[in-house]
Length: 155
Image 1 (tube, rainbow, N blue to C red):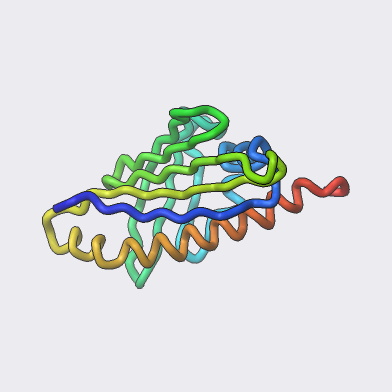
Image 2 (tube, rainbow, N blue to C red; image 1 turned 90 degrees about the horizontal axis):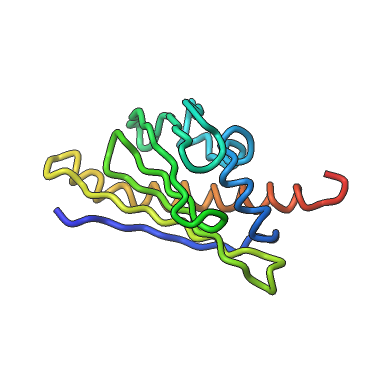
């Protein structure tokens, strides 16, 4: 079966360094933007700041729940984080790019996965795009709110 791909992008009202800091901080910032409807029991197994962090969580969608574990890398520190699941072929990338003269940030979320040649693989092909659309949309909306709040002088 062919590899699948889903991506989305949002404009976040905060400078790239602030946005990246939230995403790379798996103990506080990243945890605050995870959509609890889909991502449950999110825990940092080791590390917690960018590359080398190991996370585990449960993914819940359409009445199906699965355990997941991922290792974080930073192919481009300050610009790109990658979460590579060890429990599946899913790879999620967060790319941060300056916008509006560095006052705002384009955040691109991308997911790649290679479905297994089984019934579960066919379900992945059918369901992952809709699940990822919901997860990524909620995550980007939460990131925008959290980053905007963090930029306020009284925050």
